[in-house]
Length: 86
Image 1 (cartoon, rainbow, N blue to C red):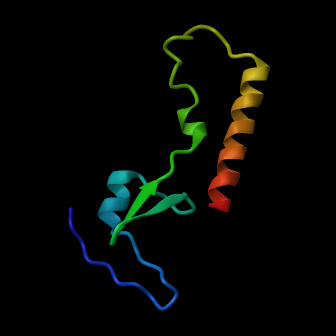
Image 2 (image 1 turned 45 degrees about the vertical axis):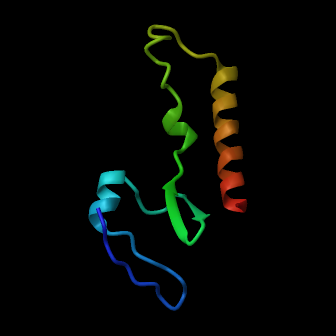
């Protein structure tokens, strides 16, 4: 997909709606902006909370301990804080 976007006076661009839908980018989500030579790459940052449970088939029928749940929440907060500072 190739689209042309316009930079506003505030340096903002609008990601085309079709691309947002395909990549499931929602309002308020974080994106990484990476410079590669004369190009810019915009990469959606996956929320750690979305990754939680990727091992659910392995642990099917077992309940994670409170410690594991607390650690997951702590890691999510820490990761989001790092993204805000970046």
